[in-house]
Image 1 (cartoon, rainbow, N blue to C red):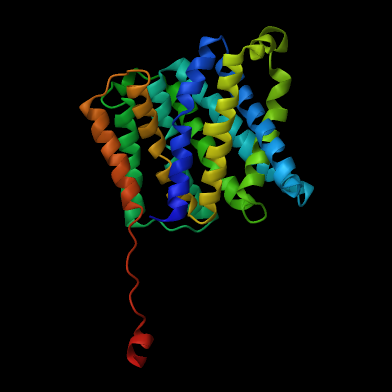
Image 2: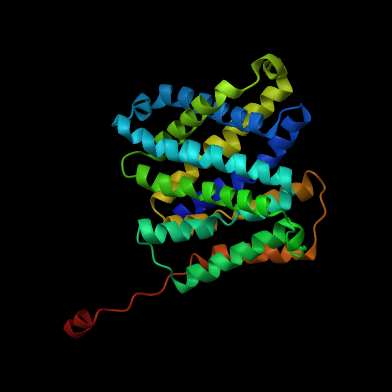
Length: 301
């Protein structure tokens, strides 16, 4: 299998572990946006500490105007999609929010067509359809009575999908000048600077002195965030953004498996079909047509 594809799927699989960390932080009384703040802050601390010792030059902007890329990945993507996703959860349910979040591959494919001239191949369209239907089946949005879903929750849910998609788009631009380590670091530094002023220090700071809370906060910043975004962004460098977004839908499969084995959640035949569709779409993305021999070359031979 293509190494870049493996890295993208590894990053997505690590994103799939986020629920375990988040659920435990909710238990200690943190709100969704406070968890987002903890996530980006600890990711920034981890990235800055690591890079100061290993590659200080990585933390240097080539040009100050390049901060626009990281406003895109940090604010327009990370913060925006989390805000929209948590609002959707509040207005409807977690399955609906998750399913709408995974409209992201469709947004990436459309934006990449216009911005990067990536083609809409038959295989890509089939894989995209498979991941959209598969995600809906895995999280349980199908079968449901869609008439009972508030319109505003659908709008916020689609907003989360768009925000999620924008990470791949802005990263593609940033990768022309920066490596995956720099992009991940700057993304979360920008997000941290944006969110920290709104954190309720007087109420929640003392909780971080609890060793278990600190474990979950650091773990959230390290595994499903710092490492996940580094490997995903590195894989993205050698992969079309639209293909990467389709491959990343392996995340709900991992999240479902964790839910089954860690939280003892129910597992249905419909979810099994959904997982099979997603995995099939991922396998389909490996398919490459054999290039035909140019006519002139064939004559010369």
